[in-house]
Image (cartoon, rainbow, N blue to C red; front, side):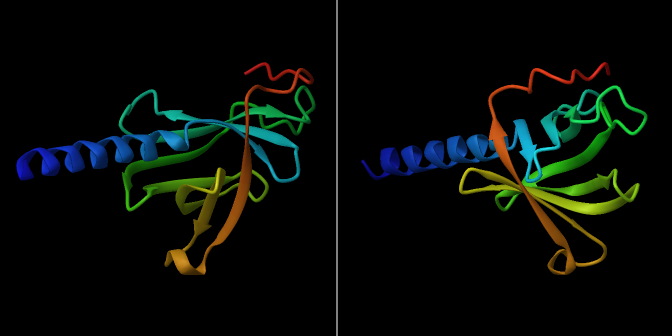
Amino acid sequence: MLLLSALTLTVGAMNARAEGQDEAKGLWLTADGDAVLRFEPCVDKPSALCGRIAWDKDAGKPNDTCGVQIAQLERYGDGAWRDGWIFDPRDRKKYRGVVRVKNGELHVRAFVGAEILGQTEQFKRVAQLPATPVCKS
């Protein structure tokens, strides 16, 4: 009976870890409502998590950021995707980054050096992209 209980706890922990890894996947609206990010496994490295701008309120204009990759995080551990980079299209710089889901919101933390010195932006999950404008890339 003790072995069965231990096995049940182990399987439960493995399922929770898989759910945690998948929580960040999907569509996320910026706090300003001006872009939607899509997080999914990286094309060239399926075990990593990549983020791209899937919708931009400026789509079709010279300053649109449609299709820009804004994140690549190599591994999931301690409740977050980490060991990668975050790109901020506003200042056109790459930072070290961590992505985690807290209370149903995506928290993207960009930093130089130690994580504690970084800045976090929060995103809300959306079911679909806004109808207009349409990103071409």
